[in-house]
Image (cartoon, rainbow, N blue to C red):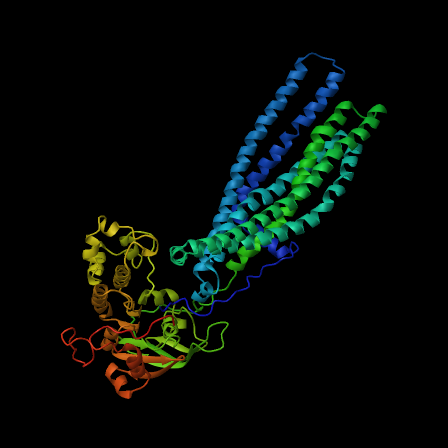
Length: 629
């Protein structure tokens, strides 16, 4: 079965790193560049954080005043009530500001995630066919799902969390200095002890998170392969459920181990900070007690330092430390995303590319040579050919001859390393990819259908098509009567990859889709080699409509197509070694005739079973090439 996703599958280095990088300025600038469109919301969020931090100091101020006042009450109870009401009002105000700040933060976070997803998807859509043949689909999906999702927490908790923690720490320190600079100095002396593990924990977290994301990507790729409809059919056909359970169990266990390892690195770090936070109040009470005894400070000041302010400062510093760890760890995610976003497309429009217009359908290859990456032997070697507008050209040859590679160069799925592919005399590389796609229709042997209705699959070719045009295309493909027999008609769901339809029905739907597109150039990997007689007859009738008034380049699997061809090109080892009509090639007694004699001549039929056509050759459909090219 010929495929357009061809060439050797190689393990491509995505640039993963085990050792965490330093926080390079260029990388930080790029990450924070995603915040620029949201600077207004970010400024409001910061204002909310400042207000919330200021109001958050109210308990410390109130507790200090209350303790000192109650130690030597000089007025009535009303003074106490006023202080308590003020503290409650500050709590309500801080809570409202917190709600506003959370909304703004989430809006910024989701906006940046949206932008990243759009960039990732746009970059992937722009990649060449070779990009996808050289990478596991599950790994690509892991980056656009797992990695982008991981960025959400980084944005919401890490970036804005850093600002929140810094502002809280700053406002708390200002109040502490205002209360007592000596106790503040004691508190500040504890900070270096809390920051010692930060650097080591950051590196360990980065390495652990990188390994976890790599293993998650491997697990996602495995699940995509096995749980896809084709994969699960293969598993069941070969009774490999037990083996696949074992493979999944091994991968799942490794993911579990890495997730636990990543979590424990952070947890050990937090434990050290917690111990430091427990020791800090004790040291402050010791120092404060000395000052109270010598009448250099008040009991309320010592109490507030040892409880409210120390806890608040400790929490903010803890958050700052964790944020530093998370920033280092998040670089693994951002780098993986940027590797995809920055990957330059191998096939793209030239700066001066112009759209093709008035396409007649002439195709020419001039001394074209193409070699797949990672291989030494050219798939096509110095190939030249000329196809006139409206011609039906069949490509014939053994497996690996270069037939599919040749057809893949016309729509620029790949570009040749040497030589030129021309459409109506224009270098295909000088035309826009959009105009090439609009004028070329492709029917693959392995038909792909979306999990949608028949109507939606047909309209994928031309969404603006009318109902009449839709029905006309289905009639030309000999599909309309079948669709009419379905309970939901054109609104019938086809299932994943069209598995609710037979092979012949899927092929006719693919043909109808191209008929509706109405291109000037048709590329067809004819797919009648493995169908029943009725399906084959219906598809051959549909192909007759499809070939009308179009330049058609067909990888031929059936003799009926070869007989109808205006020109047959015989390929072998990446070169065109014969060209001519069916009769001319048989008379030359070359490779085509050899293939015909060895592989295509059927057993002699009974005299009444089959009549010869006007060529003198059997009219039965005979396979010309099979298997992947």
